[in-house]
Image 1 (cartoon, rainbow, N blue to C red):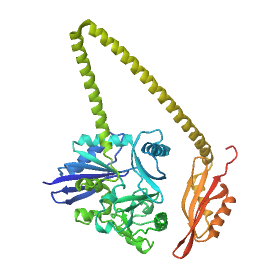
Image 2: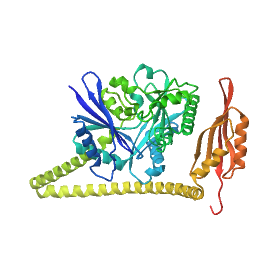
Image 3: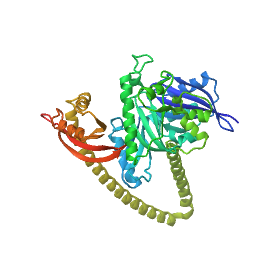
Image 4: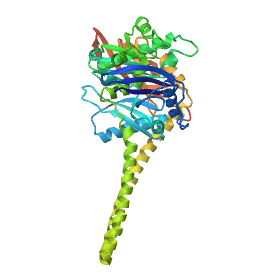
Length: 488
């Protein structure tokens, strides 16, 4: 018996889809394409109509739908944390999500991969999605009447479908080029180990004003950034080499992009052939983003980042409400029957017992409310302190554009020095993390911070050295403060 799967990738610009026939033995590719329909949560019925239009255009008889989300309403981050309990871990993750501007004061749902046994660090990777957008998608899918019990957040679960021997030769890297961002995923035997995000995507590498041409300067800078991130992972993982690097991108307008990166940027990337493995046909690698949840389901592969609770939660809440209503009706009917049967004495006893239970419940409720009030007060005080710190920082940044700040930082970097991270916290503390083969370059950076137009009070946070290919590599962290202008 053959089932037809319609797998959809929902992006900010289009809906990309792939149709797969699930047979008794394996799967077969049927067709793939894109729809320019815009998925707008403020337009009820729009997404359902777009799905129906795809089905009608190709005269499909779809037995199951699969969704992959690749939108600005999602975010994927990585944290390095020590050992802690699950409640503490989830509290930290929720606090981190709430700090993201697009999720502040909004409902959200999230998934995360619990830290494993790692010698260096426990990396926790989590993904969040706007709850309103998620509920919109689920409601629209229900309107189609087609079963859908799988949602994926791009590109978290791709390593799980890389089961061929060529994908199991030690630690490997996966570069996923999306419209506005790129992901670097490091995995080992199907398990995601490290995630790096850059704000450079297809729209910057292949700008609209350059039809079918790339911005070569931006491409080279992007490639170097990714190579530094891979090198940093190898060093943090006790010099564990990355054996292969795979590329996922849209070949339609950049067919030889991988070849250019290999020859011009010295970046040994290969096109990801996961769809070739499962569907036995050479397909544009970008469609792996839509196909991933369908392949997991068809091949019974357990997803590293399971989103099953996105479906269970609304149903469980509905079931709970129905149970409560049914229980209430049962108690009422039972009470009436027993009241008529037991007479006055039983009624008086029942009333006394009910009064006692009501008093007990009221006491319990008051105790619970007191605890919740204290908890809310603590949360308010914590939020107030954070907001005061952020207000001071924002007041400084309003007098300075980010482009100006980053321009100054870039101009003050000495040659022969590689900056792997630059962060600024709520209080205006800037952290430089990088590496260099000459101690003089690190010292030059510290001196330039002292004479900087926007930074002051530079000092070492740490300085380590190690031997790499017969050379001494200095890894450093430097702290500095943004200068407080007048009136700050």
